[in-house]
Length: 287
Image (cartoon, rainbow, N blue to C red; front, top):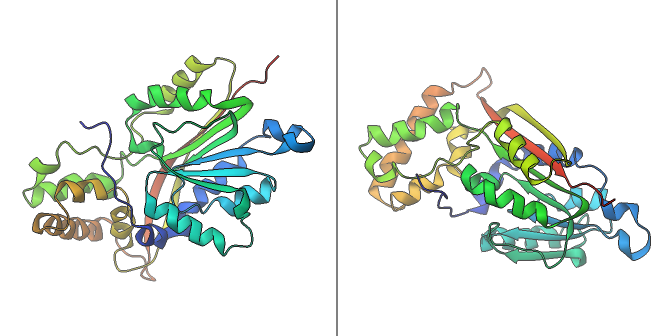
């Protein structure tokens, strides 16, 4: 199985469900404790934040609402996503663009030039396998100031029909052999794995973990397929050389299976149950 899924981001499709995608990020931010720089006075109280896998940067207003003097670096591997972030921020009075930086980089190789208060990542780190997390999470944790926090959220779609039907669609149209080695983009391990991993990094860290099942109410003709199509389906489409006949056949079959698996409610909406795993790891203060 591949360690990393291919990904090509299309901001407009991703933002179609901005409200439901943003909610977990806001709930993650609520659980971030006081950051070390906020306990200082003067110039030292500037909070340094890294938004890792920032996408279109839609967490910016929330960062500045909580930490008005923050300096935020938005890191993403997609130039199109970062360009959209810059555009959105430039017309948003709640975003202090002079305190923002944008960096096109892979989150596995990114390294800040100095220790930071917060590394925040919403629905990004699952794009690499749990085996890679064994190297990635210690590396990210090492970038924190004493008292700093690493906070992330990743989807856990292992038991969801929306993602299980990806393989079924490929099999039914005869293209399974072309996508069999494509990595399923999801949380791969249970909380115990992450507990042991984090405690091996620093047994004295503060660790807060939880999972939430969101009953997402979506509108549209086939909104569950649209939701998955802008993220988790992309690596499989790319493996089929999208745009191509094979990719079109696969996508059509997938959308057909999703309609059957997610019946519409009385008002035409679909309920899309979606599980997410959260972790907030805080480095101990220096003695």
